[in-house]
Length: 196
Image 1: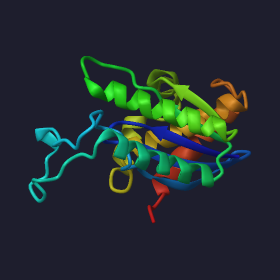
Image 2: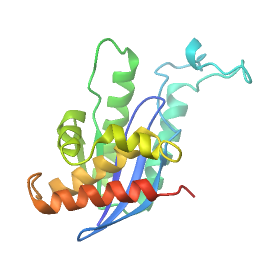
Image 3: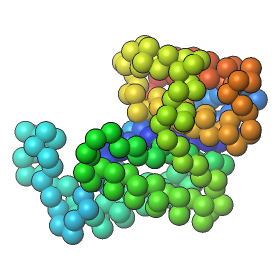
């Protein structure tokens, strides 16, 4: 079964594609999606001061409709990869985050609409619903440190979101020994994974 995981953000958006057969997990793709929605206005905008690049001071974030077209192309590429299931983390606010909540919710809604229209199952997760369970088996913070030279935390999270969705789809309970084997197998794959 092919499962895609999204850990969306308006600037950091981790993506992964796993193939799971029994207790074997293969990472087919893992990375960051740069095709996000971060501007909800009709016109190009300057990035926030904290994200402006000195090399390109005239850069503008494309207008919403331009970003929407680009984001939809990213989803079309995801559909062509043939996942059986896609899971994404929904945005959980911690304090005032402004437009990030709107952008992530919008991207998740667009993804749900496009993917389910193609017959691809789609699951939304809150961070706590999968992270607490994974952390009982693997220390995510420790894994982030072990993998920091080749993977970003959002990439790792996207893989565990995909695995959590697979287990939910296959009705594998967190206390089931198979769950521990799958989580440990994915952690091992992430540690040795080299991005191409």
